[in-house]
Length: 289
Ligand code: NAP
Image (cartoon, rainbow, N blue to C red; front, side, top):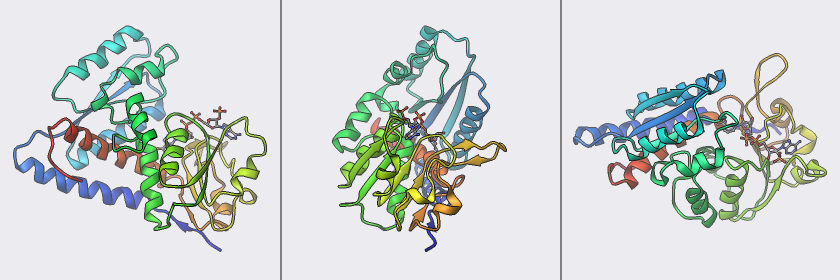
């Protein structure tokens, strides 16, 4: 068996093309264009790459985009004030804080400070709550992208055993909820899980969001499983790699995402969708996807 590749890059490009067309039509009617502000604190090189990619995607499809960079020394209160200003700014439809943040900027409260309707990353407790209840809202970008990738396989999710490895608030937990909402039977594993293989081996759908190169090997995967590799890591040689031993797991999987060009591009495409959705929900954009 040789697993088929879920081409995240191609699927994301297709979404971006559609969004660009929609926005072009929308613009010709003299409507205000959606605006996204991405906030970066410090100069982490990986964060700079992600922030620039988001900015480039905005430029490509016609979303107005601004990057606000603050020094790592910014105080917590000044940082919240900056978010407050953006919350009040009517020209801004979406606000995204690039992770990771320095220790002194309390993560949870930062997400709660962003106005719910501008929370295009979908990390505000209100938006997490909507996801929990299976209601339409602004969904966290990476899990939303993963759901699109799963949909692209044409495989029915209902009734499948899904295993999520990782329980972060931005990937593991929200994707687990989305899969529950689709009728999957879901197990969520973490660093304390005893006998990880016992769980992964039962998975028809395996989503891995850990952050460790090759933590999932061929012997841990059920024959014919769908594998979604969220991990973005550097191996000892400095090469980008996922959490899954791609070359070997591919031999037993039915579908598998590569790293790069799997989940990564979908996160950006979902963010663009969310920004337009946020703009629509604010009554400032009538374009449809
Ligand atoms: P995170 O917050 O560090 O969470 C990692 C999770 O993995 C934790 O829940 C941790 O368990 C669990 N874990 C660690 N070691 C484990 C083990 N040996 N067995 C089972 N579970 C284990 O990471 P994250 O933010 O979710 O990101 C995960 C990975 O995805 C990273 O590589 C990140 O760069 C990547 N990522 C990619 C995208 C994209 O767009 N492609 C987006 C977001 C994240 P505990 O909770 O017990 O510590």
